[in-house]
Amino acid sequence: MTIGIFGLNRGDLVQGRHNAFMTRGAVLCYVQLLVEQNREDEGRQRLAAMREEPHASVLHAMVNVMDMDGAGDVLGREVLNALKDPRIRKMLNVGPN
Image 1: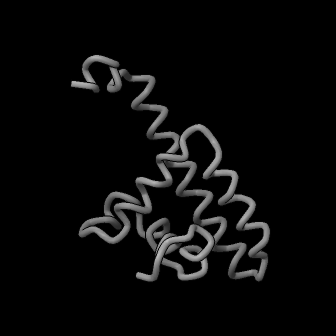
Image 2: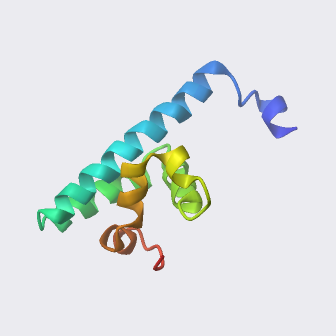
């Protein structure tokens, strides 16, 4: 009912969620690259920024589904690999896999 009452499936909102999903995935992959280059402080700054911006709930949802069957199909393999990286999980304060 909430979706209908507030019109949460309007095209602009659906597109906004899609865009937020895509950019968060790109940032996660970039953070993994930074970590591999021993630039964890820069990675932490980028993850902190994602947690504070308007679509932070998209990152939260990505973390919530990463251990579900088919997560790689939804998130993409690169994004899933970044989310499952123990160093990134630690930065996100997500428990071990």
